[in-house]
Amino acid sequence: MKPYFLLALAILLVACEPADDGIHGYVEGEFVMVAPTSAGILETLSVERGEDVDAGAPLFSLDLTDLTAQRDRAAADLWRAQAELEDLTKGERPEEIDVLLQQREQARATLINAEKEYDRILPLSKTGAVTIARRDDARAARDTARARVDEVEAQLRLANLGARVDRIEAARAAVKSAENLLAQAEKRLNEAAPVATADSTVEDTFFRAGEFIAAGQPVVSLLPPENIKIRFYVPQAIVPQIKHGQPISISCDGCSGTIAGKVSYIAPQSEYTPPVIFSVESREKLVFLIEATPDAYHSELRPGLPVDIELGQPS
Image (cartoon, rainbow, N blue to C red; front, top):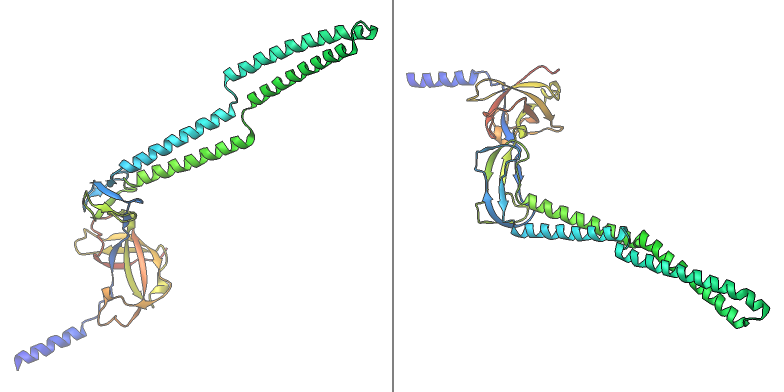
């Protein structure tokens, strides 16, 4: 009977042991999934799983042959559009203006001679020395020469002004369109060979060099230190005591000491205890999700790691 007595005593002692009132949670990471915006063959994978990378470090590169050609064509189209706009706004070429200047000089000389001839014939026509018809011909020649001078001077003004306003506006629109197309081509080229936007840890890689990558399909997942957070659940009775920005202490198995953090999110609604922290005592309880961020990066805090939380006094 003695073994049965000892077993019953052990069960009684366990039943009478005080419940663990600590707050338990786990580490979660919000991963950055890096993907190209265009499809292609993965040419280079520059990182490995678990590797720490600095901001600006290359991650991978697709085959850039087609994208580079598209960028070069867009750059050439922009150059042509800019050249056409410049040509329209600066007027005629100097050689063409020189021709018009010579024509104006000739027209002025003709006008001077025509005016002299008319001035000579006019008094003679009054005395009957020349016919009326001769006088009329001289006047017509003078008027024609004067009109020619006006015509050439108008052509010079237009040549110096350049093209019409509507043609210039159309050329400016063409330049703007070409600039946008070049920017898009450069963006696609850059996104086909992305770099890390922040210091991060490479959590995983999903492809190898030579494999086909669809547009928008992640190739690498990164975890920046600022994307690490602590999630834990508290009973309804404790929620009013927790404030945004409230300090907490985080501890875990293998941690060198407690880690300071602050509450960053308090769920507005309750939920049943998630399966990840089910226990016989808590599985039917309503709890509130709380999220917190460590004050500094700690390599011990890896996603999925169980942690214990101690709430500090709200400020």
